[in-house]
Length: 262
Image (cartoon, rainbow, N blue to C red; front, side, top):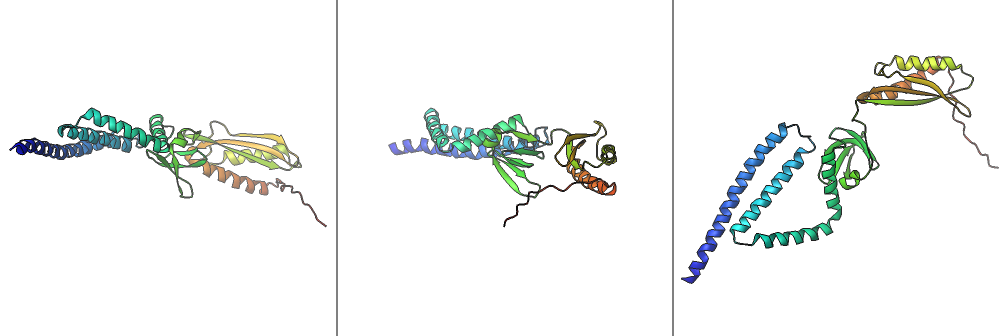
């Protein structure tokens, strides 16, 4: 009969552990569903929402496992020590991944950019598609997806082109020395002042900026809304070429060194 006295508590502990696991998973699932709805409608940045849900779910499951271990009669303190030792060994093996994880936390906390921003960082540029825990996804203008490790991205300079609502568009045009200076200035001013997407305040800047070896250089700087940047850039380049042709303003060809061999 001794074996029955030994077996009954063990069976009770196992049954209670199983019941706790089932009930706990149901509670966690219901709680995560509720929290998911609350976080979705909250003002938290969209980049941070998936990470928060994953983190909360992981913490709740770890607590449930520790509770089950306690019900089974194991020493949680010893188990925690084993987990710590295992975590240290895993950390040494996955230093790069941990650096990326820490970088992801840093990016999500400081938020130098968010989903939808056009950025440049670590030698790449594109629109932020997603900020994952280990990698940030960029979508390039030619529809390529670039995965940048968060550890590297968080330790490099980041240029965010989408933070401000306006951007300055800069141009330099070279004109032949024989062309009248006022004629060139008036033509360039006419082009930029008549473009519908060029912002009038600040006022467009059009000045002669340098005397080159074979051309006189004119600098043009205009402001536009960030979403209109490339439209203004290409429109003005095309319109200036058209107007220069109409006004007989010469654009010298680049001089090339030609070496003749006998």
